[in-house]
Length: 247
Image (spheres, rainbow, N blue to C red):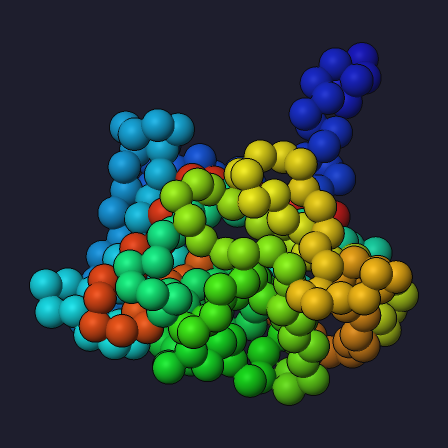
């Protein structure tokens, strides 16, 4: 009896590892929550589809308060083992263009100041890739990083608003020494993910794709984060996180 043909899900499990989390409950063995100033992570498990909300501050709201939701370091750059991660996120600016938002995968992500203070964006030294939006900005940015060798691109996609955005990141090893990092976005919150263009791209310029060298990469965690850009509470709502890597 061919069990793989009889139970095709087993075949998939042998090929890839990963998860899909709808937040219909909250898995404390998967996710770690951190927040400054007694900020909170609220789980609305009985809401529509299940959701989680990150709040950087408690009753005393301050600039640069932050909150993160992150996994163990379950992934790394390896030849022949592409990575895809995706999140369905929503935030509206609590004050004019001051939200700091992050979704991605990186070494050390989830620690304090994964989003640097005062609109500084992601850390200056990490292995990984992420979408982010900074205090003073209005668009999604995409960054790939191996240590301090970083490539950062402002996309042509406006971040935030009343609706959800689907953010996807493909990390595809094209050799034992080179990696491609490809951002994908659906600003309507659906599954029509497209590669964005660089903001102010010329008509013949291709969509965003980073290529970078890797040799001894560190292990990486999946992370979502929010940081206040002013003394106003800035929530971030997450409906879905998915991750797959070739086993």
